[in-house]
Image 1: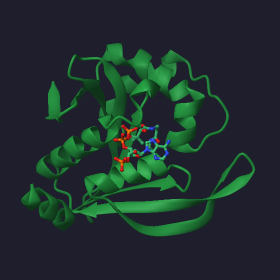
Image 2: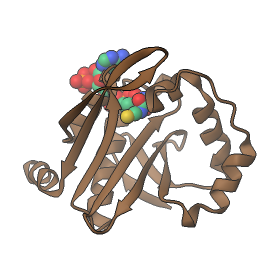
Image 3: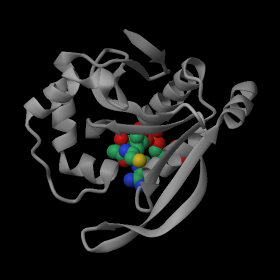
Length: 182
Ligand SMILES: CC(C)(COP(=O)(O)OP(=O)(O)OC[C@H]1O[C@@H](n2cnc3c(N)ncnc32)[C@H](O)[C@@H]1OP(=O)(O)O)[C@@H](O)C(=O)NCCC(=O)NCCS
């Protein structure tokens, strides 16, 4: 089922058949580096993703598939750690098919997903973090209306080098301002 539509992509619910893509993207060292700041290649077996999928209703992470308009799965987008007291969720995204990087697909997916989250969840704020080298992600988030709220200096050690962690967020007020402009 589609949950959100952008101009370049649609976002739909995750299916059992998508686990092979999630495995491929998660185990890709370049994707893992940008998405999680992990320098070493992982080799997570499909069975681990299957176990997660079977128990996903109790998981704190809700994951969706980003697909092109001709239905090619190119990545995944998620929210996690819903805090009903403070009305906050944490957003995560990776475009796993690398030939789609830098062509507007990520920005389009984030915009559509943010609309979906504010429309369907009782939230006031979406937050995320990335690290200083991930300029492409920072720019994409800013284009969607996220603001840099703080920097945790040298909080992430990647491959022997300390990186600043960039904290970004968008409030419902920020979102409404953008929505009213369009
Ligand atoms: C981060 C991500 C979602 C962004 O989506 P995208 O489709 O690649 O990005 P977009 O094309 O929508 O926008 C990227 C912006 O960064 C710029 N950009 C693209 N490649 C860049 C690069 N290598 N270095 C710096 N800036 C770059 C683009 O010019 C664009 O800005 P502009 O419109 O002002 O010119 C996607 O690249 C991705 O999934 N990367 C791997 C995992 C990851 O980093 N996840 C986020 C973790 S917080």
